[in-house]
Image 1: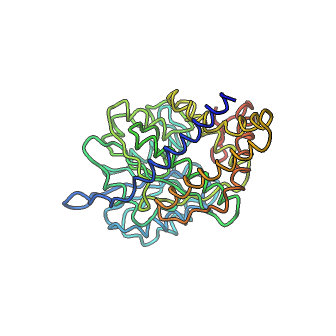
Image 2: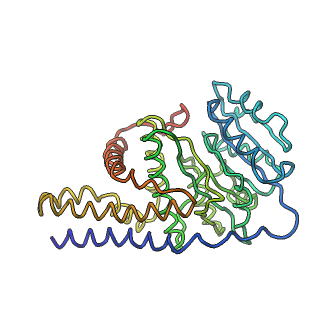
Image 3: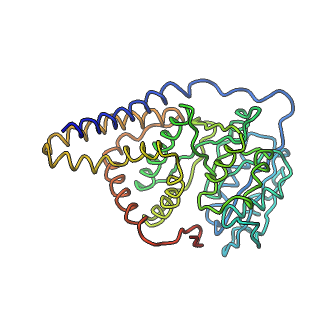
Length: 367
């Protein structure tokens, strides 16, 4: 029983610290932009077979509260087999800034997939700031100001956050999952140990990007944003990770369980490269149900039910803090179902990760 007591004490302490760290931050106003003229920025978007989503993405960019004449939008069309380019052109017709579609037809260096598209777009960009998002993302109107406000000497990247949205229960569970996970990432960052960046909502300065040699010089990875982040840290550039409403983008959900598993399997490749101490924390967090099942066998279902109820309370507090920090109403009614979702996803992902399957991205497979 001592081992159970130590494990659950550690687990609840981890969550309690996360709640306290998140609760004390985020209330301060964003810093003002530096005095002087606003800078020109480049928005880089990799797209492959995104005809159904790209219009939403580009309409959000057109609605940015930033002078259009200072914005350069570059869309990399990566061999799409649908009408991605035509839909994008229609969505940006009459745009007051610069809009270009680049047809990606060759690989640069070691880059493949999305990293290769971004390598081409970075070469074509004409500004000192690369703001990167995905075709299935809708950024908020305050996105550019929100990212630019946190630049400082020595800072190479600024990362926003993303919330999955959608009308179905499956979509809302993904949204809860995303924001809780990003909340834990923010906790580690706020404690002075930044660990990653998110490639669907980030700013990278040209100076920092070029110091890495660009995506074409980086080892190929299905988590290209994490690979870039690691090299930026090695090169001595600082980073900022923002958990704020003005940089909260909305992502389309995964519509099928298989798609969700492939997405999370790609993410696991990045998790496997995290520092050992952080992997230990994640193992502690993720093994809850396995240890809870063992507790039920030793101490009976009553003890296990009491611990599970305490988990609901603490995780509800974490969800409340995460959603309120970005101005959203926490979906606390979803928490009981979220437990089943988390359990099913964890078991499925462990089995799925063990299979000798390639990584999939937009219909292409990578090893």
